[in-house]
Length: 64
Image (cartoon, rainbow, N blue to C red; front, side, top):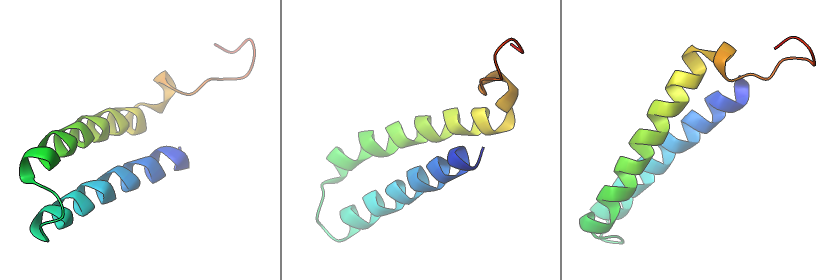
């Protein structure tokens, strides 16, 4: 579960750096936009996994 929270934080941080890169002129908005949207989808999937871990966690042998 902690790893999912870490992944969620890292994905959100990446979005922040994408915004920063565009504002500073390091990256064109047209390049950053699809990357930002991809990270939105990733964050959505992580949020579902965090809210419903029982669907994603592999149990001990024979318990699933």
